[in-house]
Image 1 (cartoon, rainbow, N blue to C red):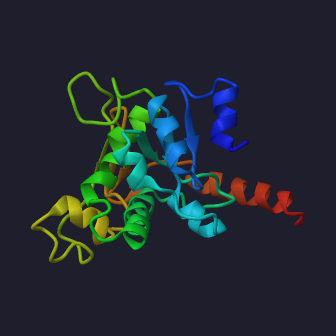
Image 2 (image 1 turned 60 degrees about the vertical axis):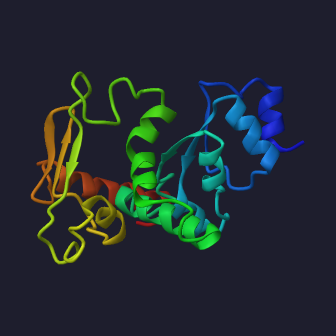
Amino acid sequence: MRPVDFMEKVGWLNERSWFAHLVWLSDEDIKKLAEHDCGLAHCPSSNMRLGSGIARVKEMKEAGMRIGLAVDGSSSNDTGNMLLEIRNALMLQRVLKGADALSPRDVLEFATLGGAKVLRMDDYIGSIEPGKSADLAAFRLDTLSMAGGLSDPLASLVLCDPHKSDLVIINGKIRVQNGRIVDGELSELIKRHNEISCRLIGGD
């Protein structure tokens, strides 16, 4: 029995369900997932790091599935960089399906409203609208990485690779300013993280 068939058997194919990766899907699998309004958390960098394969995102999008982006866990994605995830999502589909497989706007939507729809939270996150959480990522356009791309800033955000946000506001609070995380405890958290990591792998 294929995994999607098993999920159907145990009642997990429904509008409250979403699945990570979904790399090895058949046409029938995609059809079932779409018919049951299931979502996908697409993790392209993790899939590449582990050599897991390339998810058929183009076909899932065409079938009407809810699609969001994710980084997976730290064990299979060492950066957790959502900008890189957006770029890799585009590039993987293009290398598999051709240059018109997905557009930069497609993958930016996956990363924003798409993720909110997967989580069934699009009534208050995922887009900039009155009544929604004040979540915002902003990017400078006068940088070397964005030079020459101002005719289409949204596409340049994906294709020119700005590396990081210059300003991030989460629920109305500034968390990144001038490209730096605003958190006085960050250095201590990094130190603690490294200590825990060392213990986990059997170090001193």
